[in-house]
Length: 206
Image (tube, rainbow, N blue to C red; front, side, top):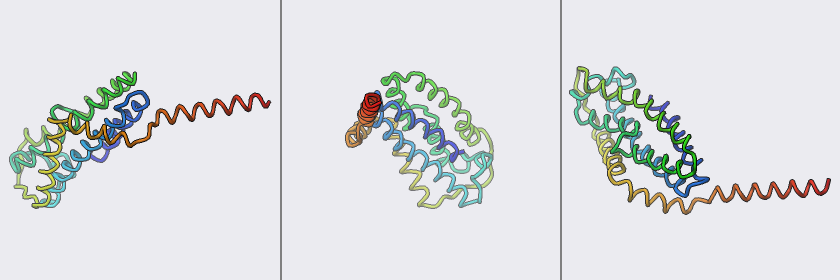
């Protein structure tokens, strides 16, 4: 599920790229979302590794039944990661999607923003199902994760929380970083102008 979800999240980044043609925050929102998705996905995969290393499980949804009783902290972190992937506030995923949809609206791509919101709602069924299984079912066996795995889960969870509660400061950093990215919209206009000139010259020669 996590692997296939990367396709959907790549689609959100493409919305930001498309918005970059008409919004100054298109590139910066894409950078912010990539950071938010990076920490969220790394944390989710770290929880999967924690389960797989201990009991050779973690690859099936049923393996997460009762995780809240077997390992409350891992379940809490996984639940937060799932909420972030869905785009529920206050998470880094919500902040990233908010900036992307705002950039799309500024670029007069309201229809694209609406599609993004609808797909986020649909994805909630799959992500929140994991939360349901962890907290609403019983499970057997205690999960003892390696210290390194727990450290990764803790770091990524804190990063996702910071991006969710304090997105403004970090978005300002991505906005400054976006200044180093070439203005692709301006470059596209120049290419279009050059092609138009070439066509006019060829027409005159004919």
